[in-house]
Length: 239
Image (tube, helix red, strand yellow):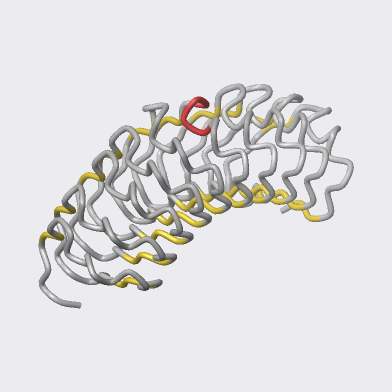
């Protein structure tokens, strides 16, 4: 790492063929709007272990070839509307270990039409609006572990029809509403271990008819409705 604090406009303007850029372990707190303007071939951008607090709208707008964006271990509290606009080929987005509290603005993930992996562990997320996730139709792997999500509402993940793995361990989860996992017909692995769940209702896991692995260990479950696992025809591993 170095001591870089601001990425100015056109910093990399002659690096037309650059494919990987690592700016990890600096002290970056600001990225100017046109900082990455000429990096048309960039496929991997690492900005982890910095001091970013906000991701502004259109920060990455010119990085249409980018496939991996790493923003873990910053101080990000706020994701502005359209902050990932232009990243039409992004497949992996890592936002682990930040200070994000809300995922409420419907346009946060707009434009991420190719995203397959989204990592948000170790933040402070309390609530997820279904509308925020509605355009992430290609998502396969979603990790929300170690957050403060105490309730999963109906249809939270309803547009994530391709999702195969959902990890929500250590999320302080207290309640799963009926149809919370609605439409997750391709989900094979669900980890909601280390939760504060006390009861599993008969409709908790409805629609999860491809589920093979379910982790509920180290929770506080005291009662389970008689039909709670009824639709889990393919389940092989229950912990």
